[in-house]
Length: 317
Length: 307
Image: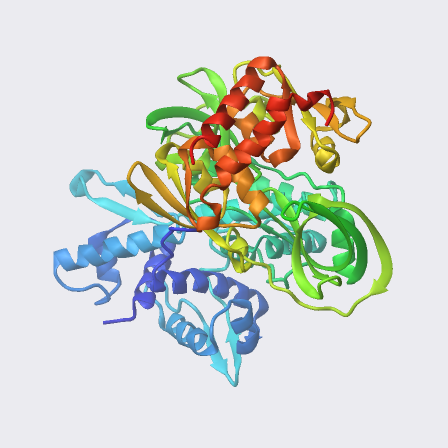
C-alpha cells in the first residue's frame, strides 16, 4: 500500500515465522529449498530464524518452544504446544483477499456459483462480513480475447484508435488481459506492426478467431498507473488553476508542481486529438506552456468546434 | 543482548501460555535478561515490542489490575483470538482463491493466502490492478462490524454508518448512512482526510439486501439536482457506434442518413456532461436544451479567446 510503513525487519521475520512454524508442524519435515521458495526468503535467512526459534523457550512456562532441527537441507519438526495454527488474518490481509476474490469474480470465465464463490463465502464468514463490492463491467470482446490469450490464438480484429481517429483491421495474438481503472486492456503481438501493443478492449469493435496458434510468450504486466509511462509518448506542460486538480487524479501525470495560483502538470500525450479533448475540458483557465506547437491548441480547437455551432449544422452534417 | 526476534518470539509464547495476565515486571522476570536493565530502557523496549506485535496483527489483551497491584497494566494473548480459524476450503476452492490472488498481485493477499495454506500461483493470463489505499482495511472492518465511522471530507467532518465498500472505475467508495444528513451517501475513499475514526461495533443495522450499486449513480452525469434532465447530442458517424454501445440503444433519438445519431444523454451535472461531450472532440454537438447549448458555446468562446 502506497505510503504504508511496512513492518520493521524484526516484525517481518516474526510475521513469517508465525506462518512457517504451523506449516512445518503439520508436515513434520520439509526441504529448505521448498520453504525458501514458498515463503520468499533466502535459505540462509531461513536457517538463521529457525535456529533462533529452536533456542526459544521459557522454563518453566514453556520448556522447549519449538522442537526442530535442520540436517542436510531438510528441516524436521517435532511436537509443539504453541504455534500450532497460523496467526489470524490481519485487517489488510483480510481486505486484500476479499478484494482479490471479488475482482476475480468479475474476470472473464468466472463462475458465479463455482469454487471461487464458495471460497469467497467462507472467507467472508470468517471475516465477519464481506462488505466489498466490485463493479467492473466487461466490454463485449473481453471473454473472446481472454480465451485467445489462454490458447495463444490469433484474432482478426477491427480496432478503433482514438489517437489516430480511425479504424484498422489487424491480426493480434493476445498475451495478457488486465483491468485497470475500470478499463480493460490486452497486451498483444500486433502482426501489422510486428510489435507488442496494448489495446483497450472496449475499442475492439469486432473480432474473429483465425485458427492460427502462435507459440507462447511471457509478457509482464505493468503495475497500476505506471504503465502509461512505459510508452514513449511526448509530454506537455500544462498550467491549471488550483480548482482543477482532478486532472492529476484522472490522468497519468508524470509530475505535479505547485505554481502561483495552481499547478503545473507534466502529462504524457497519447495523441494530439487526446490533448485537444483534455484542453476542451479544462477550458479557458488552463494553459499549455510547452511544447510551443501546442500552446494555442486549446483555442484553435475551440474555434474549430465553434464553426459547427455557429453554422447551426444540426440540420445534418 | 539477544536477537530481537528471539525476545519477541518468547514474548508471544509467554503471553499465549500464561493463564493470568502478566505485568511488565513479571514479563521481564520471565524473559531473563532479554530486556535491558533500568526501568526506562526496559519500558521503552517493551513498548517497541508491543507496537511490533500490533503491527503484524497479534491481538494483545490488556487489563488494568485492581487490589494490591491497582493501576498496573497486565497483558496476555487470547489464543482463540490469535489463531486463524480453519476456513475448511475444499481443494477446488483453495485453487480458485489462489488464482484470484495471483491475478490481483496484492502483497497482503499473497501473505494471507500463505496463512490459509495456499501457494503462490504463477501469473494468470488475466490480471487486475486494484487501487490500494491505507484506509480500506479499517473501513471494511468497520462495515463488517457495523461500527460507526467519522472522518474529514472536503474540510468538514462526517459521521457515517458504513454499509459497504465499492470499487468502481479506478476509485474506491464507502457508502452508508450519513448520520448528520440522515441520507445514504457515497464518499470517495481517497478523498478522506486523515485516518477515519472507528466507533463501537454493532452500532447500527444495515438494510437487508443492501447493494451499493443500486444507490450509486450509474453514470457520473447523473449526480446532480434533476436526475431526469437529458440533452440531445448529435454524434458523427465516426463515433456513433462507440457512443451507442456506451449509452444503449434506448438512448438513440434519431439515426440520420449519413450514419450520425442523435442520443439523449443525462446532463443534470453540467461539468460531468461537458467532460463527456468534449471526450468526443470535434465529433459531437449538443443540440438541446438551448440553455445548455448556449452554455457550451460560451465555454468554447472563452477558450477560443484565451490564446
